[in-house]
Image (cartoon, rainbow, N blue to C red; front, side, top):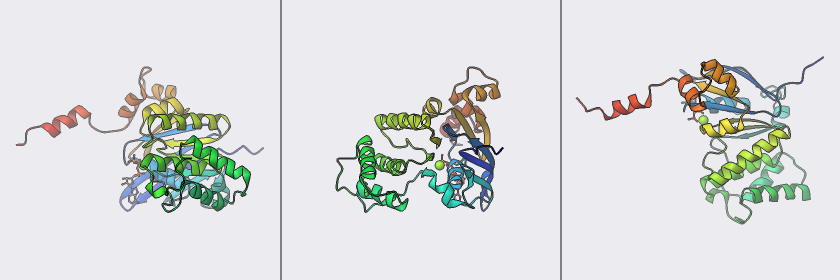
Length: 262
Ligand SMILES: Nc1ncnc2c1ncn2[C@@H]1O[C@H](COP(=O)(O)OP(=O)(O)OP(=O)(O)O)[C@@H](O)[C@H]1O
Ligand SMILES: [Mg+2]
């Protein structure tokens, strides 16, 4: 009997940029309906991993699978199931919010008509962009661009969402809205893989968390599993993060910075 494939699977992903080894042998699996969090210091390799999983950059080695479809060998099947939000989302600056959503819906061959229109209006309303009629996306604020980027994924209702810092730049109410929305989507079977620097978001939202450090996955599991791995039942996610990702203590760095010059 064949097993149901995982919604997302990274198999020994490697990416090198010249001498920089951005991602080194990263493997993990995310079952359907799970919210999986990706943490790591700046430059740890989170964006590179997400870009390989969505087919935006070709791995030096390894395989990225969405619902069992190889993102590079079977791109149509994989990408039809996938919604990807880049850390710098491309949003056509010369379209209004409505036009942009319409354009994305056309690209993905969503049937035109009242259902598509309803979905579009609902998303614009949800993200409080409905009354910005006639304004070009290029003139949107940073947070508004992030929201229209998210809306452009959600309009297609993909079964797998890969989100690179989805709450980056959002005000507290919008960030809460996105968290609640992702939770609700997951209960309905959508799989979410998100990277974040906001540990509170990871802890509140994610069933399992992966921590990356300099291209490697150094830990993967539930909070309980991460605590067991670190041998500390009381550890907060911040404690675990700091312990698992290398680097001098901040007090040491501050001392060095403020030390009198010889
Ligand atoms: N196009 C590129 N060319 C060369 N090096 C790159 C390129 N993209 C990423 N890198 C390098 O790969 C490493 C991983 O970068 P990546 O953007 O994946 O990190 P990240 O974990 O997403 O960091 P951040 O938290 O700052 O977003 C870094 O050393 C970075 O400089
Ligand atoms: Mg990044």
